[in-house]
Amino acid sequence: MKKKLLSVFLCAAMAASLLVGCGNAASTGSESTGSAGGSGGKVGVAMPTKDLQRWNQDGANMEQQLKAAGYDVDLQYASNDIATQVSQIENMISSGAQVLVIASIDGDSLGTVLAQAKEQGIKVIAYDRLIMNSDAVTYYATFDNYMVGTKQGEYIRDQLDLDNAAGPFNLECFTGDPGDNNARFFYGGAMDVLKPYIDAGKLVVKSGQVEFDQVATANWSTENAQSRMDAIISANYADGTKIDAVLCSNDSTALGVTNSLEANYTAEWPIITGQDCDVANVKNMIAGKQSMSIFKDTRTLASKTVEMVDAIMKGSDAPVNDTKTYDNGTGIIPSYLCEPVFADANNYKQLLIDSGYYTEDQLK
Ligand code: BGC
Image: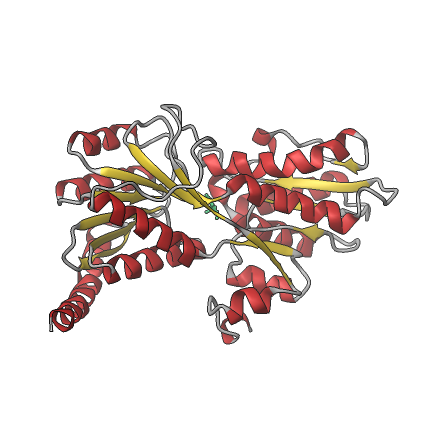
């Protein structure tokens, strides 16, 4: 009986959430899904943007799993605008959230608002991206970001058979937003694999751009990656010189690189890496335009985060499996690192369709 009442309440609350969501979006100009849920306490979930498919999935999975666990959920998207995210978090604090789950836009911009949260005893879980220089962060739930990078680097190493083939091979590199701490881990992991081959002359970066700041992509934007690739091609590959591989830290940058190659490049198609298994990129993988993407099952990350929320609400310790890697400037943040895997044209069906992540139709 109690269960039945709860589910009736949840349904009503979900319907209410849609209405509240529309209201908020209109009045603040931000992307919002509003608040609703159960009775076990209130959780604020702050996501960076709806522009990238993965954050929509993260938000939806978090909301669904938190509600199923009996919590009220206030899920907000901030259109990649830092001030919007700060004010959304302020609202979550003033409306009684007990736990905040935050995927930051800029890891360094939340210190002040999170100091308020700490003062009020609100716990903070950094979701996917580490929040820097704030002692208000209790836990970090993410995928193993360094491993994402090493897997991308290893994919290029293995596909080009760098240990045996004569080479040299041409490589270009793209990573993400400098304000996202993850970007340094992704790029660092990939470079730990590839740099020895660059130093040995087996891999050649004709643009000369290998330092993090040179290969970073503001906002992880497809357009920014595309215009940088346009410039690289016109300066180095316009005469038909082959590019053997393009290291892209994620799918939005891979899409920009692919668009640029389609418009400007005439030689044999390179190996292109990615991350997130966004629908557009999986379609490109099937069509032979992107070689691989790292698959980070957002359902797994959401369920680990819900376990953390649950533990906090019950006053116990949350499950963590890493207590040495992620120092946010105030000390090590106890972390749970989920394991990423790589998807390509050979295994995507098993990973993405058989697991129920996508339907076959979504990838047509
Ligand atoms: C996430 C990636 C994502 C990127 C751009 C990173 O912090 O870990 O999965 O592709 O942000 O949104």
